[in-house]
Image 1 (cartoon, rainbow, N blue to C red):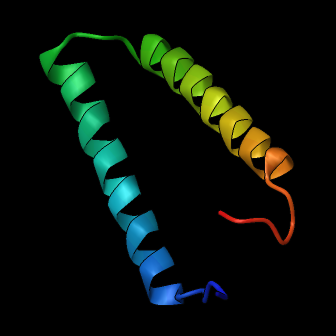
Image 2: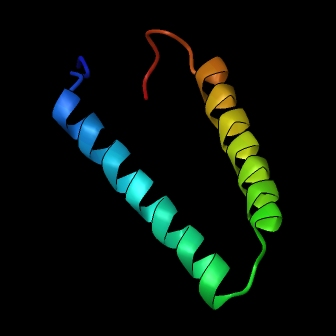
Length: 67
């Protein structure tokens, strides 16, 4: 089964993710009282962990194997 790339779905997912990030930043700054430095540090750590997990998933997956 071949996976087809749908540009509209990718664009929509990117837009929604950006909107959620903006709302999360506003809530963290205004309602929870976190500073911009604290938010930046946490975001960098989270992005690094997500990147490592995605890379590990791509490296472990064998071509032609069952998914």
